[in-house]
Amino acid sequence: MELPQRWESNQQNEVQMEVFLERLRPKLCRILSQFRVPPADSDDLIQQALLALVYGWDSIREPEAWLVGTLRNKCLLYWRQRRRCLYEAVDTVLLEWIAGANRPDQDRIEIAYDLDVLLSKLPERSRRLLMLRYREGYSPAEIAEKLGYSPKSISKITQRSLALLSRELLRSAHCPGVFREHVEASS
Image (cartoon, rainbow, N blue to C red; front, side, top):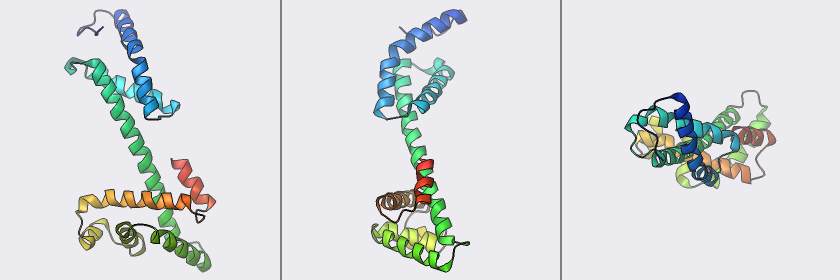
């Protein structure tokens, strides 16, 4: 049952929308389950997709298919954003570790050694990029020029490299509790 283009009354609108949503509920729940979206965030994603449906109703030919596709896209964007937050947390912690303004020299030396060990486990491309970015202080544009990449691709390569480093940190014994708590809180 499709909703009419023009709704005659709010009460009729609500009933028709409830019937429409009730019919789609199993599909929407299955999508959220497939993407493993936490229940607390599931409602927000559904509400965002429904609002987009309501705002674009007049131009949407297949509301059911459109809503299902939109929810899938919202789930993908949700996880991309969560991963980005993790990489930014790693980025921040790395900068704090390397800067180490308030740390004694011995701590800085130990941290630098631990990072060198972890970096040695990464692929050459990731290792070089992270070394240039955080140890040498190069800007993304300078890194792109030095390594022969497009300046637009450096952000994505940096995120992937930080993802590799964060996985390695979490797997290793070099991951201090403060760092682990910071990463877990942002994921």
